[in-house]
Length: 115
Length: 115
Image 1 (cartoon, rainbow over the protein chains, first blue to last red):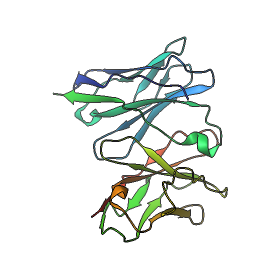
Image 2: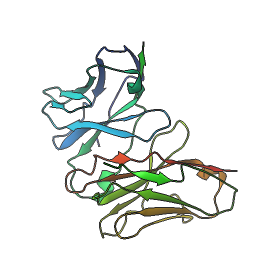
Image 3: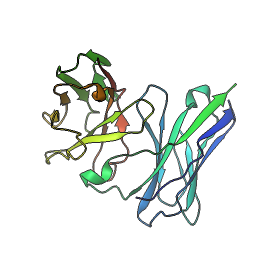
């Protein structure tokens, strides 16, 4: 699986957009980009994923560069409840192979949303 | 709808005792995962169940750990003769199969403390 690099921490003012970058320069053609977050003392939470097109759901938007070597998770209007560690991972196409679907997280980006 | 539930939320046990941790996945999710997370650490995969297939036990740290999934739904993780190094948050996640294995939905976890 491709390695990802994220900044260790970021701050964002409440109500502003939070843009969290992720580098995955060794990503291969069949690998998806997934984002999870973990709020303190809670289990991880799936946010969004994409292959090459930009994606949007009720939680966030995912922008993937044309060369797919980096991506940005965008929380359009950050709130205090978005304070969490955000994890970017890349995985091969989600076929039904058990061992391929285990999640592993790196150190992630600790996002602090402030008033 | 209802998310993944786990019980108990907290468990304190004495070294050498056996413990059972329970997970109720989201209804209809055929894939179920157990992870553990030690303080300040990343996710450690333990075991994976997919439908009626043999579970992937490759992450279990020792033969003191076992898990079962009855009727394709509820799962129980059992730790025998607990040790202090077993202290961690044990997380259960579930997902749909067939293309959604990395969209994992996590329960709140069981915090296990071995004294």
